[in-house]
Every structure is written in structure tokens, then in C-alpha cells.
Amino acid sequence: MSSPLATSSRSPAIASDISIDPAVFDPSSIAPDTRAVNAGIVKALGAVPDRWVFPMAMLRKLRLEGKGPFPLAPESPYAQVIEIAGPHGPVPLRILTPPEPAKGVYLHIHGGGWTLGSARENDGLNHRFVERTGFAVVSVDYRLAPEDPYPAGPDDCEAAALWLLREGAARFGTERFVIGGESAGGHLSVVTLLRLRDKHGLTPFRGANLTAGCYDLGLTPSARLWGDEPLVLNTRDINVFVGHFLREGGNVATSDISPLHADLRGLPPALFTVGTRDALLDDTLFMAPRWLAAGNPAQLAVYPGGCHVFIGFPGSITDQALARSYAFVTSL
Image 1 (cartoon, rainbow, N blue to C red):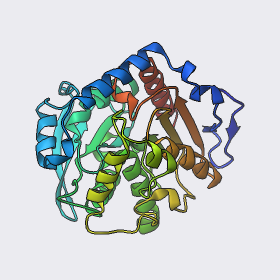
Image 2 (cartoon, helix red, strand yellow):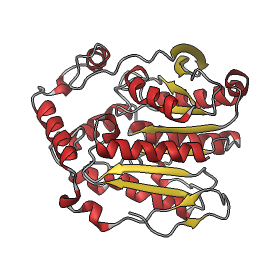
Image 3 (cartoon, helix red, strand yellow):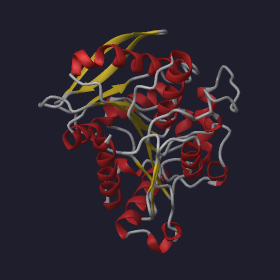
């Protein structure tokens, strides 16, 4: 996947590389441990009854109790929870602070199709992030659909970003801020960047660490054509998630809902990470060049056989992808 690096004149310290070696899409490039992880996921999810017959609140409760299809990571000893004011009421923030002075702050927005997931469920990845980068992590427990549909979740993420800009320097001793997330969290990260730019005239984040984001809620071809295979996420799941998120309506062609359609000028350097066995593959493949074409440094990392948000599962490509993301963040 290596190629000559083109450096942006606007941010000369940040290299851009969105070239892709076609070999990453060859099934023969998939490592044996990646194949084994994917087979285990399909087996585990294939054994679960139709989860969409259960209320979302029940599914969330089971996941937090460690009774979901995948193990719950141990709670991080670095974690504490505070609440900040938001437009719809209090917004919990789960803050992981390193033992040494923070080298920066990562505003993390979790995934889960805007309906599931929590900051607590990301303690494993976020604890590792703190230890490998020296950054503090602020993970947002934004409101979830269908109980709180669009625009509640994006509003909460916007409020969290504004809180960090007001309080971050005093609380963490640094104004080196990075934003990022996975899946719906990647989507909400970009929406938050656009809102800060367009509503507040602010471009405070040095970078965006975006993993397997969903950037077009009208569904890109890979999402539409994926089918039923339960490799973390399938076409039906995406349609269910979008339906809950937009329960009270919304135009999927607007940038606040589908940031792939936005004017992306003036945004920070971004690292886009995705696996080739991800139903949202096209979202990343389409967004990375648009980011670059808008004049923003962009790096694209595509991993053979990686499932949706494969960094949440052990394996060699997970280690590679996380190491690259840590290097990206600490270079900003």
C-alpha cells in the first residue's frame, strides 16, 4: 500500500496518501488470523435470534452487562464520568486521563448505528489509546435513537466539542485536540467538525481519526449490495439504524445527515481506516478522496479482510491499524 507521499501545502508537516494497492482486495491477501476472526463473528452473530425484535433499551442493557455477542472489555482505571450541559439536557462524558500530564486530548465518539453502544463499552480501545499516545480521552455518551432521533445525537456531540474548547486547556493543560470515532462515531465526528466550522467559525481540531464511518445515509453501493451475511454489520442492519436515527425525518442528501455531500474545505488532516470486508467500505473509499480534493491532508489505510470496525477484535491487522492511528495522532 505504500506509494510516494504528496504533502499538502496548507499543512506541510502532514503527509497525504490515499493510494491503494489493488492487492489488498485480493482474497489471497487476507491473513489466516483475520479469516479466523471473521468466521468466529459470523458464527456468533448467526446464532443470535433476530435482534431487531427486541427493544433497543434491552439490547443496550445486555451489552453493558457483558451479555452481548462479544465480550465487554474491563473497565479502565483511568475512567471517570462527568456531565455537561447540552441542548437536550445533561450529556455524560467518560474521561480517561493518563497518569502523566496529557500530551493532548482525543474527543472520541463511539459507534453503534446511532442506536447502540456507549463510552463504557469502548474502555478497552480507549485505555490502550491513552497508554500508547499519552493523550487523555473524552468519550461522549450522546443521546441514542429511536428514543432520541436526529438531531439529538449530533447536538450532544457538538455540545461536547464546545465544552472541550472552553474547558480543555484548564482541565488537561493542553489545547492539542484531535477528534475521531468508529462507524456512526466517524459520521458524527465529521458532522461535528462541519458544525463547528459552519455554525461557530471554529476549526480547533488538529486531526480526525476516522474508522469505518458511515458518511452517506442514503447508502453507498457496498452498503446496499452487502446482503445478509452477519459480519458485524449487514444491509438490513444499516437500514434499521438509519430508520431509527431519522425516525422524525430528515433529508439524506443534506450535509448534516450525510457529510459525504458536504463542502469539506477547511477541515483538519484525517486518517481514514477501513477493512475490505466491511459493508461500509465505499463510504471510506468515497470520503477520503473528497477530503483530499477539498484541500485537506488525508491518509487512507485499507486492510485486507478487515470486518466492520475490525479494530475492536484481536488480530494482526488490528495491531497494524492501531499502531498507524497512534502514529498519526501523535504526529499532529
